[in-house]
Amino acid sequence: MKSHWHMMVVDDEEVMRESLAAWLREDGYSVETAVSGKDAIARIGGREFAIFFIDLKMPGGMDGIETMLEIKKLQPDASVIIVTAYATVDTAITAMKEGAQEYIVKPCNPEEISLLVNRIIKVKDLQRENVLLRKKLTRQYSFHDLISKSPKMMEIFHLVREVASLRSTVLIQGDSGTGKELIARAIHFSGDRATKPFIGVSCAALAETLLESELFGHEEGAFTGASGRKKGKFEIADGGTIFLDEIGDISQKLQVDLLRVLQEKKMYRVGGNVEIAFDARVIAATNRDLRQAVREGRFREDLFYRLNVITITIPALRERCEDIPLLAHHFIDRIARELKKDVTEISEGALKLLMNHAWPGNVRELENAIERAIVTGKGGMLTEADFHFLAPGKEEAGWDIPTDLTLDEVENRVIAATLRRTHGNIKEAAGILGVDRSTLYDRIKKYNLPRN
Image (cartoon, rainbow, N blue to C red; front, side, top):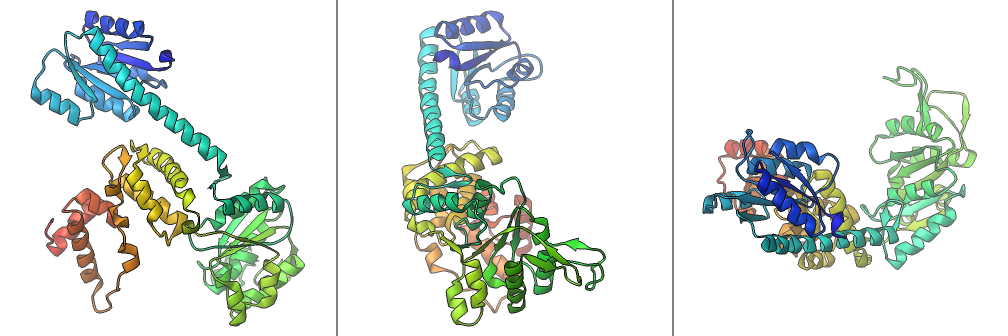
């Protein structure tokens, strides 16, 4: 219904303000009026307005352009129509450059206003319908924080539900970036331990002695720097789940210790002599081939079979390409909202490019690509041009890392190549390099680099 769309008329002239509002109400829209820019901003409150009609020349220190810019900060999706009796090419160009959707001249024609509003609302109806459809699809194909319509992933979701409330150890296998921790969390939060702790540990991030202390805790004075007693992750996870990520990277000694802990459900803190019982479900994950590691003597066979009670193998993204559009739209909705960017769509050409990419970094790489495109993109729709960094052959070709250059020389070459690629666009180059513009300007000055 039209009454679901709210509009606001901002004009210091009462006759113009009330006439325009009356025409819009006759067409069935809900309309608010404001006498100035400050009044308009104060009246917005928590309501969402589809269209603002704003007079260009208003007294009170805030003209129409300034009012529009402030409103856009609060409601970036709103359409703004600038209304003025002083029509010049310069003012029209300024209004459109700053974000106005239309520019109309007084005296206004009611029929023209109706046609203009009807055209804008039709677009907004379609956008709203698309958003609702995407949300419906996301709900239909989502499971906790996982989104997929792939038959392989549907089987995994079914298995997760089946094993969620069991005590059995689970081994999750899959390439980096496939979402192993998300599967582990889905298991935990789908079962009867959901209200208890979920504790994650990256086994590859710490040295052996630190990882041992992290897992099992330590007593005061157990080693240099152990100034007090510390509980280990197994103890903290009591009643819940401990997630051992990158389990294939632990040392032989820790493999022995972990095997004993898994068998007995008891442990000693480092430097302690009191046995501590715990009840934590163990979920382990790896991107390594543990069977191969067992054959090569790098991983204990008995520990492998202790971990490998229930196995879940997550397919790579390239094996479930049907998920790419779903994931792309999901990431666009979330990332654009987090970054406060007015990006809502992705073109067919861009989706085709994403579907044809190999995604060696899997879902994590796709998420990063979407974020980079949103940061460096300039429109409300992501296009093929916004994913230029995924051009065919770039990832496959790789990069021979120079071993005969200083770090400064490497930085110089990388910045110079990025500037050439972006034709001197500092904002885009800074986004690609992951630095702010001031840092990039400093480096350009330091290495005396040309802008293009």
